[in-house]
Image (tube, rainbow, N blue to C red; front, side, top):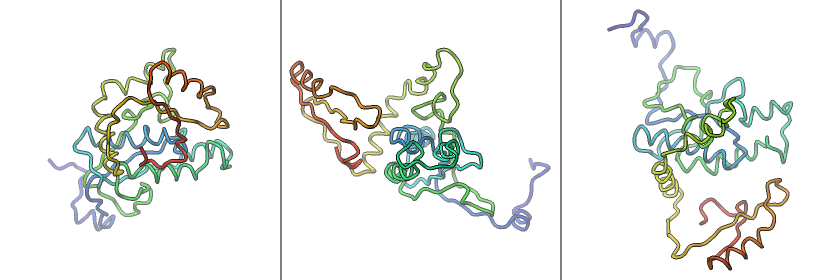
Length: 238
């Protein structure tokens, strides 16, 4: 059946120009709180993997296209800057340098290609050989925190976690896929050990009394306990 508004390839090319062809698989997504390591990992990188995992085998050759709308999406880096009167804070939540840093650090976990902005395509028509989109419900923040769309119900925290139920095997595949892409060899430890993130006291989220806690764990359980400062190590380091 031919749609009444269909157009022949020749007429299409004559009217709009020859389309640009993006070969292979592409994923279209948008950034959310990109200045925060955890949000980039679980609200951008994980959904990109999960979307591929749901429709076929994840592939490092996949191209990433970041949707960048004219009106900033809630809690994205550009939205926070707009909400801050256009001022970029050097050490605040809207630090674009951190957005770029974490993107450069984490996107290679799921793609060997440089990140593209969707609005960089054109003005010619663009045809994707295979395109995947719709990452919101695959994110760690699910429908509540992610995409800036909180559910206004008393027990909304339960909705916040629903998207993560029953996904244990997918999370494990995500771990194996990303570690392989980073060149990290998984060597299970022979004995249990406890790793404590020694977060900076000026972050506003530091937990105090950790040395005493570590001593108590060592004495009670007889396991190795050590501290790490995550900002001082690379993502490849175990």
